Image (tube, rainbow over all chains, first blue to last red; front, side):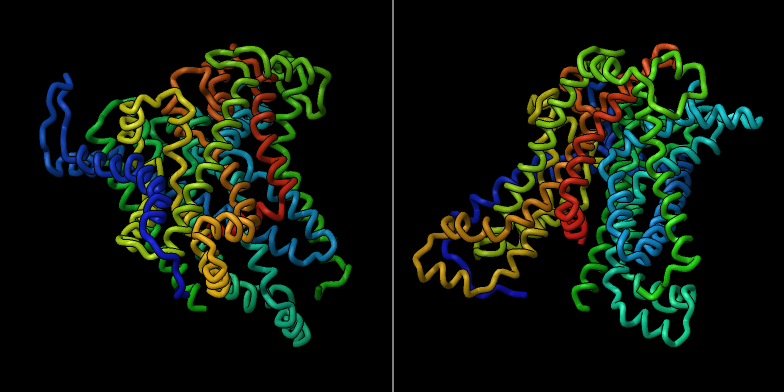
Length: 293
Length: 280
């Protein structure tokens, strides 16, 4: 849609747009540029001078088994979180959509975890599985299963996946429910009259009609698992044991702030920049497509 | 709908109720833990029914310091300022920049639009170190401004307002111009009133976003008295289980999630609208 009528003048709009541009310049463009710049240098140990090293930070990065492993960890983590949180949310949304009177009540009961910070979700799950005081680790111990997510890498991955999923279900649930409620009831009823059972209707009507929202959620959940889950990792495992839950974002933080490795951390930031860029473009393409509907 | 009250109707309720229980359980357990003594927690299993220490634990959490942290009362105060600052700041700067982009033609308008769009690709997480350096150089570490300003430029909010402004009929602007209204008059008397639902919906989402910030406050604050509640809870957990005062930590966790949960539940319609709008 294009607007034909404008107000006159250029001074006022420039004044109005300046705050956002200034903040973007100071806190977005300058730091991003600096990250790219730093990624090409290697500060010496005494901090007296920095040496231009070209792409060797990147080459070093991609030869570092820990970094390559962090890619794998991020992929495993993101896939689990995305599949679990979308799958469970879809199940709950489909069931809620079948109800008329109590749908609103269930909606209320399912959406509030969105308000709980991922870091707090991490604290809650860490508390339930704490090696000494955790309720579940105690019961698991009774059954002869020793739970220690600070030593066992499978258990560490499992608990961060569960905590991240718990925080995310409500978001996916809301979008799926909105998607389901926008499907015209007449279509469902027509196919029911034709004798299609629930599962048949689910596979032939609901799934195809939900595919745009599913694709959108898939991208949004990847972004979530890549970036917003920092708090979950930080409160539960801090990337351990042996870097087995070290997702890329956590590694940027831990190499940069804890390890103080400026060149490597910046190079990692630049790699992340590419990933976000890619995800944004995919998402933008999706929005463009949706506008044409 | 199509289904009648048969087996499948009850099956639906049973599965949904199990879902609700699983979703609520972690918070319930934290609540129970915040009402018992530390003794009851360090000798597992912890009870599943609230105990009688609720007032003691919550008042200790609100007023005492634990480990390296300051009292939760102060953290809640800090977090409120930061969350309100981020939410209001985002709305003010995106509303005015969207107004400029949609209702005016000025040099480099397209360029400004694309510059704002590009910030979508630069979340805090990908530029941690250099942004920290910038904030440190300006001298904003351990200040509310340092916690608020780097987070208030929002491409999403700008796009949302732009999208909405584009649906404002040309006739309204024409009428305003004929009546001799200056742009700022139009802005205040027409645009703000017709946008108030959008503003409120976005405010709800941005408030939760601001409240739940974690990584940024960890980097920005070395002074415990500036810490926000979300990072503060983690600070209250000791290095080992022996020194952690669990009931108080859990009371702090409950207090940390209460304000945003109340906002979501009491403004459910606005919340859902804000969430579904702001991500499209």
